[in-house]
Structure formats: C-alpha cells, structure tokens
Length: 366
Ligand code: IPM
Ligand code: MN
Image (cartoon, rainbow, N blue to C red; front, top):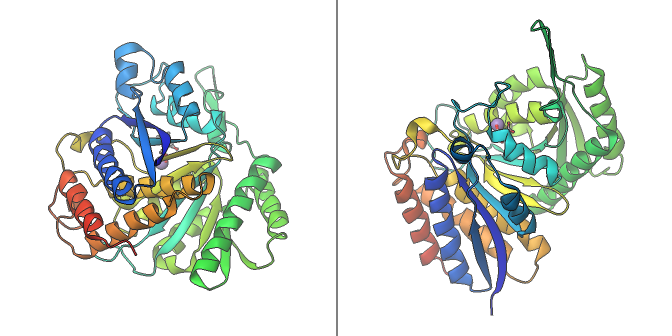
C-alpha cells in the first residue's frame, strides 16, 4: 500500500487555479508512476477573492487544515484592487500569516537557468539559491507600523540573534549539500546594508559567528545595492545567498529575471516542522484565465515539496519523484516546443503540463 500524505492545496487568485491545476496533474502522474506514495489533496477556499466575498481571506478552519497537513501547496494569491482598511493588500493575511504562525523561516528560492529558455538576459552558468529569512526583518512589522498625525510613518526592522542564526545555519547546510553534490567548495554570501544600519551590521555579525561552525565553506559579503549589479553581471559567483526578509523579497525577483522571469522561479517556505511550496511570483491578474501563464515555477515548487517531504518520510522514493519532475521539466524546456511566451514560445499553460507529463510517462525508471 502506498503511504498517503496529506497536502493542503490553496489554488488562490488570478492565474493561481490554472497553474496549480498543471502542477497537480504532474504530481498525480508521478505518484502513479512510482506507486510508493499517494498525495491526499485537500483543497482550501483561501484567497483574496474569498475575502472579497466573505470578509475573511483564510478561515481558522482552513488554517487548522494547513497546520494538520504534511505540506501546504499554494498557487498564487492577490487581487491588487482589494485592500485592507489600512491601504495594504490582503495576501499577507494568508501568505505572511502562514509563514509567521508556522515558523516558515527559510524562504528557499532557487535561481537556475534551464537550457532552452529564451530571455533578454541569460547565462547557462546561473545556478544559485536565495535563502530569504521569512519571519522577521522589516516585514515583521506588518500591522505594527505607525502613521502619526498623517505626517510621519514608521515600520521597525526586527533582527534577532536566534532568527538570524537559524537562517544562516540553514543556508550553510544547503551550501554543504550542494558542495557535496557538485564536488566543489561551497559558499554562502551574506547580503545586507551593514554599512548603514545597526540591524544589518548585527545580521552580519551573527552570520560570521555561525559561519565559524562551517570552516569548509567560503564566506562572502555584499551590500544589497552592489548586489543588483553582481547578480546581473557576475551571477556565476553565487552559490547560496542569505538575506533579510525584505531584501530577500526584492533580490528573489531580480534573480529570476536573469533566467527567464518569474515563471521559472519556484520556492519553498520551510521551518523545522511545516513547509509551504509555491512559485515566487504573484497572481498575474491581467493574464488570468487565458491559459497562457507559465506553470513551470509551480511544477518545480511541487518537486521542491517532494524533496522536502522525503526528509520527513524516508523510504517512499519521494526524492526520486522530485528528481524525475525536475529532469522532465529540463528535458521539456530543452526541446523548445510548447513553451509559454514569457520564455520564448507561444504555447499554453495546459500545453506545458501535457508536455512535461509526456516526458515523465516516457521516462524509464532505472
Ligand atoms: C513573495 C510575495 C509575498 C511577500 C507577498 C505575496 C506577501 O511577494 O512571496 O515574495 O512579500 O513575501
Ligand atoms: Mn515577492
């Protein structure tokens, strides 16, 4: 009997449902092919659209279901014109609530070039991972900022020793794994503005202390402004990048711009107990429902979910399933047939799902 794993699925808004559909089809084919695990999908009505309909974006029951699941799989959330009374958007009520309440401190965002992608900026050597701290930093002040007399507004940066140490440690462990897999030394780059703010200088100090535990890894530092140049002109320098929440949000959009755009940007939000998997991009409302959005970031996020589950449920061939998805996406993209417009083709969302599935079905399991 294949072991069953509970997955809370949040398709969300905009292109969310259509990209989620393709990723779920891919996961389904892979689980049938391997037959060692079964994904028990529990769809959640959690979205900004739900907020618009009912006044509540994510019910407490839905939150409890996410908490009880083995993993959370999310499409995309957001309708820009729907706002909270304070003028901010509604999607943090879902995405940031899950990250903060479930301690999903590692925002793991791989930036990798897949051969076949056509883009204005691209380099086959690009292959690094942004480790975004996702439970503190400037965004920890969400709902806690002040606007005084309609004249002055403040939000406070929150950097703790514990929060910084755990993300640096996670980054260093990832760099170690990558070094072992690639047979070279690993490197962790610390990105901050330690030249200006004490909070970032402290972040860098804790980085240095934790890196003392990893003498096998190279250290590297960059200010976030200089990083904007480096990531475009010398991206091959990077291996693992560790960074505060807001800066991480920003650089994890710049990185994908060098490998074909956000349609190629998967992500994981992982803590010590829970994990949530979603593309790094938003809900792209202007192209929603047209079957033209690129589902690859979501499909690859599904592979990241299986990889993460493998560490918790060994013996179910989940890593093998993840590798199969990744290799099949790579082969599909390499052929340059049926790609969506963002990466140089004129294909469709469902066509990409079909194409990746066709490769998976043909794959020989050694
Ligand atoms: C991301 C998004 C989120 C963030 C939004 C949807 C809350 O931009 O995951 O990068 O700001 O973290
Ligand atoms: Mn973002």
